[in-house]
Image (cartoon, rainbow, N blue to C red; front, side, top):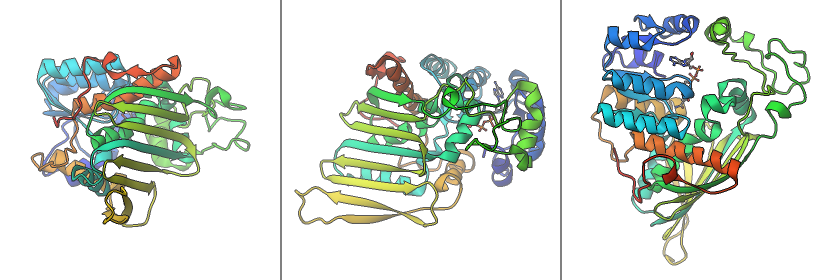
Length: 401
Ligand SMILES: NC(=O)c1ccc[n+]([C@@H]2O[C@H](COP(=O)([O-])OP(=O)(O)OC[C@H]3O[C@@H](n4cnc5c(N)ncnc54)[C@H](O)[C@@H]3O)[C@@H](O)[C@H]2O)c1
């Protein structure tokens, strides 16, 4: 998204002046694939000193985001970073402090805010369709293939991705914070790992070198995909990054089942579920308010060009009936959100943002803190206060940055 798409669609507006990756083999292949025709570096300081970029786009493994962001800020760059902002509270605080210290801007690319039908939900909530929101439900389901892809990579280990509570749920908690228009105050959670890691009945070195390819429901032959082989497998000798790693390796310590209760500063209670091992890919979202209830059920893959939202007015408003609201579903990555976000980032940064879709560091922090608190709550069995994690104090109403 931040490589080939920029070269193809935004080269009249921005120029990629350098590419950096700590893996020289992957860097070489990616550079050819992206076609930016620019110098490449395995050392970030060297890239910044020589090429003097205005903006650094951070797309590394999640656990390295903070060091790359802070080094970029220290060199005077603005930052566009992939989600999650980072993976724990100490690193989050270091980013908050660095943004203040260096006076540069960090944008977090929450592309999940940009699909047109989600913008429609936000618009309806802002117009007060349900009145004051009192409670919300957000249930997200990953299908087997999606979860397997996480378990095969660094995402399976908390020290790299912060677990799916952070790596994946950052998107969902950010959406919830944005829709509810408040910041989280307290979190209680359960999470469990049931199928993967040490729970597996056998294990191999990786899928290519495994004695159990017939028995294993997760066996996947990466050699059938030459792009992935060129990008990952051919370069694993540099850094040991195995793209088709065993989903039963003992190092896996994340969860495949997650439930959390989140209390917001404005009194809203969110009931959140991330089922990481489902036959269904999609989600269910609902808001109950003083004037009614708004529901959305969205399959991850749909051929429809719209999503049907259901509004159920409270019985006090007897003149109103249940309404089906058709919300547009447009083409492009991530349900049509990516091209809109990319236009705002690169083509027209001054594009009006009435729904507050562009996210800054505070939004990035507030979304990961829910997941970080959920991880902590799982371990202690106790609720966790968001104010105890960084120096940010939860606000009753979010403020656009
Ligand atoms: N917004 C979305 O919908 C979305 C979708 C996919 C991925 N992502 C995010 O994008 C990022 C990259 O994901 P991916 O799937 O491309 O991962 P990847 O594992 O394919 O690539 C990460 C790269 O970072 C490099 N790297 C690690 N530490 C580094 C450092 N200190 N300096 C320079 N390079 C370093 C690795 O060598 C690797 O090549 C992640 O943060 C992920 O969460 C976001």
